Image (cartoon, rainbow, N blue to C red; front, side):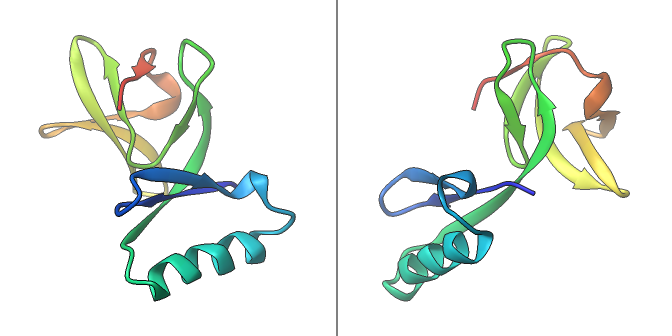
Length: 97
C-alpha cells in the first residue's frame, strides 16, 4: 500500500515509497504535525492515468470533458462529478491537480 502526505504549510508532498517502511513515513509526517503543520494523507489507487501518472485519492482528473474528484466510496475508488460517480478503472483521462 502506498500513500502520500501533503504538507499544507510547505506546500509539498512526501511519498511513502521513499521510506524503508510505512512506519518511518508516518513517523516523519507526525513530526510535521507536531510542529503545527496540517498534513493530508492520500492513498494510491493502484491505477495510472492515460499518461502513466499514478492516481491518488484526492486527485482531480480530466475525463469526459469534466473535472472529476477521485474519492474512496462503496469499497473502491471512483471519480465523482457533481452527482455522478464512475468506477476509476473504467475512466480514461489524465490527472490535472
